[in-house]
Image 1: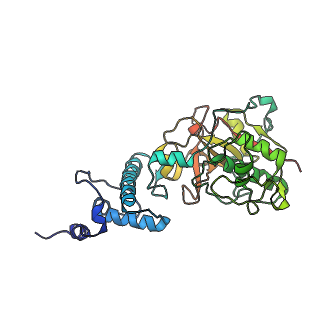
Image 2 (image 1 turned 60 degrees about the horizontal axis):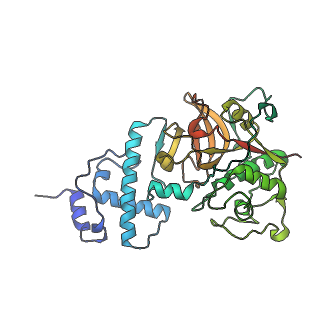
Image 3 (image 1 turned 180 degrees about the vertical axis):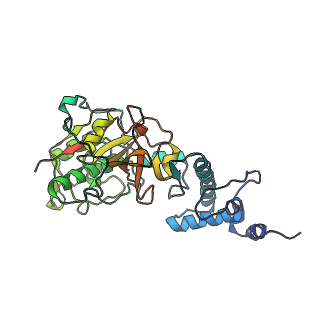
Amino acid sequence: MALSSCSRLLFVASFMLFSFFVVTSSDPAHDFSIVGYSPDDLTCINKLINLFESWIDKHGKKYKGLEEKLRRFQIFKDNLKHIDERNKVISNYWLGLNEFADMTHDEFKKTYLGLKTDQLPKRNQSPEEFKYRDFENLPNSVDWRKKGAVTRVKNQGSCGSCWAFSTVAAVEGINQIVTGNLTELSEQELIDCDTAYNNGCNGGLMDYAFAYIASNGLHKEEDYPYLMEEGTCEQNRDESESVTISGYHDVPANDEESLLKALANQPLSVGIEASGRDFQFYSGGVFDGHCGTELDHGVAAVGYGSSKGLNYIIVKNSWGPKWGEKGYIRMKRNTGKPAGMCGVNKMPSFPTKTN
């Protein structure tokens, strides 16, 4: 009996390196929703291996040996199944293969989150003290990227320093709004030097980091570059110029209208719960998936708008430009829940700066 082209390729491959990949014959056929691949491609074992190899090349992955590569392939296959199954049932956003596709969800959470809310500072809950309380004529949409107040998407890598990236994004924004200069600032300085309450790669909070910058200023990124690990504090590095802020304000918690008022005036630091599996593979659209409100990730809100009847907040992440919509996620607003999507309304804050 003649073999199909897929079977012939698999037969030949059995004598080669990839014969060691374990894929059970009891796996059901899946209509995988991966751009550029047909259902037949992704039910053929050899094609799955080819997809894995092309993904490895695209993302420059390196593994210590065959055993590790086999383990990562199995994780990759399981993640591929999750992406396919979710894309069949969700409609307003979609998932895709990204550089995290060889990580288990537990590995991902341990590596890329880092907001610590167990020792929250006392927050300003008084509406009377909220700086933008009386702001009127809220625009229909705001995008601080288009206004020149947002720097490139950065990548925290394998350091739980999201809190520093969230802080810096908000400070870069207000600095540009006040001075007209868009200047990349140093997350590494916060990781190394802001240690009274924050814990470097083991997490922290944006309000504490704002307080540090108000007291000490913050160096430029080029003068104090990111290491993806904790280093030695060099607060006076090269005596180079620092950017300063006057202080910070908290937006009243669980109040989306107040969040939008503040966001219409400047980028904000916000906390979200990003531990859901769909977050790992978010690729585009308005995210309205399942998530709670236990904040575990610091990000920056840089605008809001509407698309096809869905209102959203534009969020800048720190997982690099290959994640999501070139490093951003649009998160649904007007959910009817005070805490908002994934708790985005729970803990917004922003730096202040005078001329």
